[in-house]
Length: 262
Image (tube, rainbow, N blue to C red; front, side):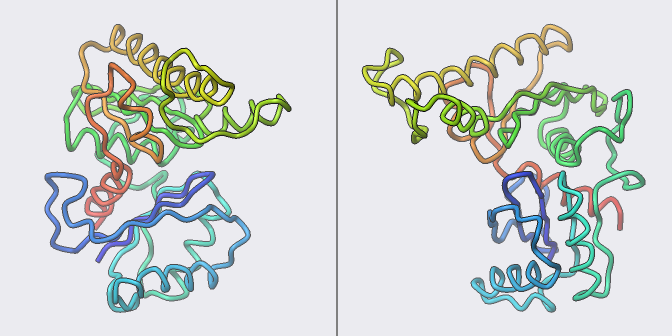
């Protein structure tokens, strides 16, 4: 089985794919997924024990179940820890998305090394599932927008502050505004501070997505728009532009990249 690991600044998402999985959808062969907090101080042994425990919950022995590891990471310290963990406990090298790794996606960024590994994995997954042109909106620590051409080229994109980061900053700077649960208010016109915050968050971020996507479509032509990331399912229903929600898009991209490097 293939263990895919997407390391974000806030969370690490892990997924296990069966070796004989099909590739028609991101969920094909996805036997299990987990989300854990990103803790840079974890050692390779602590990380290994954690993963071993997650697999044991499904009755898997990790030294027998895992035959490959594919990683995208935006946290260099955790990347190093994962490399050391795989080297310590397995007889193979992990595929860590970065320079020299075959992705099948041409990068048109001025400096291709600046593109986050998760954004590349998203582009690979999106082009495989929907072709191009396509736009990927990833709701993570930051909200990223990535454009993929009809020829399978990563054209670039946009980066905005993420939903939770923005709300944390607001509550941290305004003493009268406490943290809230992000759910739909009774009305767009809030009748309390909590409802007003919920309205501003949900409809505000939905409007941001639609505005940026509209401008990208003006530049690149009609495109398929899809969303991924931990908060995609929360914000996407309030947008007009997002057509598909693919929560495991990054993992699907990592699975494809792993296969292309065998």
